[in-house]
Image (cartoon, rainbow, N blue to C red; front, side, top):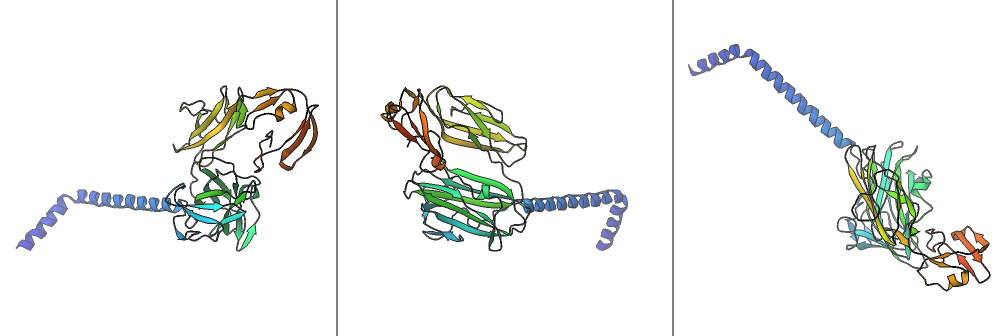
Length: 354
């Protein structure tokens, strides 16, 4: 009798609410469809995100105090736990044309690849640069020499510096040799620190604010022009510049200029916002030095000057010798002669007397 009552009740509910039940079923199917679509979209987004192809790129794993795990060449390397960019450890490398290198597989020709790492060069006796290659098997590919094997070296800075470049993997590329080198300068053997290496293929390239200036050592009253070098993210960008480190916005154009009227050392910052509201800031500490030069009338007086001071030579001199090596120039007048030579560490600074 009880079962019969249930059966009758079910039939009654169905007959009275057939339309409602059908709508409920349709709504449930629609909900399941959207849920499935959301899961599929989420999975697709996860698949499209670029993954770091460098094993132990953050240098948190070490086989011993001189060998970061998974790296193929680790010359003059020491585990560092105090001076780090991120995490617990970085790699400290003593100069001497020494390499830190890892061979990476899985590169796809024609794909966008972003190569990125951080280094700290605050040592007059050492300098650094990237020295990397695309690979086809074990053979190197020569493309992108300017970006992967540049002719310039790092410059001293108290801050960690970032190297980042986005390239298209050339035809036949199936790997990448990620290598950085540390070199001697001044016949010394200083140290460079490295951290947070990454190689990312495909996906969205992160916004990376950066800039340069047409002069960083200038006399009072000089106007310095700045060039935006921002990459990644989604264009167009908006800009906020602070040229004197006071926290006040000084310009919003892409490539502005700023006049420095007071002697001193200035920190410059650029904050960039992309079209997706991503924000990145590049700050160069003590980037611009503005000096007051002492006027002198002849080379003899200049030679008697104090090391580290700035001078302007007002009278005429004769250029008697020059060569491209270190941009050397030999000048003289009736009182004396002097050699003008670029910085001995190879970072050209025309007019520096050494």
